[in-house]
Image 1: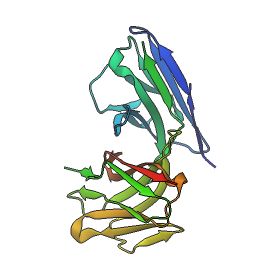
Image 2: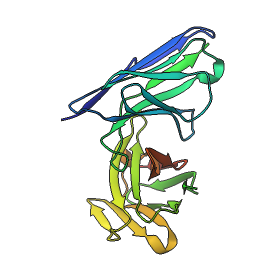
Image 3: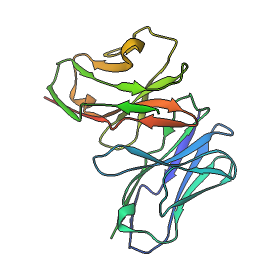
Image 4: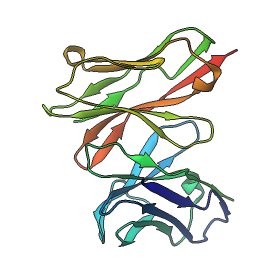
Length: 112
Length: 112
């Protein structure tokens, strides 16, 4: 069976510090991978998605970047965090576009 | 443009009441896929159902049922005999390209 791991679960970072959130998928190959952000009490905002190694599509211009160094690894990064980067970050995978996306447990990021 | 509207921001019911969550979508595609997800207080998104545009049969899974009507572009979700554990945010989504377009979500509060 397939599993998705996302860490850390919670993170508190000062403004201006770097960020690296990691997501890995097990039990499948060549998945579509996604990063979402959810502000408190709001809906899901798609940040990045990837259909293959090294292929990254950005949905919203922002302070963040994503990379896919390996088939089942998806990393969300920032060089300098802003207060507005606070939120709940979710990683997801799917086999194909029309298939369900399966989500990790999320990372709660607080910027101080 | 693809769009999903969940007009109900928040619904409160008393346990054992039936509740329907509305979802209206917009798409120009003739083949499309719709989804429902549940986000409990713990934060992870749980996949509930996937429906393609060619299958208009209603679906029932235990206390959950879904009513898909292409004529009104709606994909509504009904919980029968609601329970406190049903309290969550529910998202409707539409597959588009390599992505899912999510509605803003409906907060369901079930009181004992």
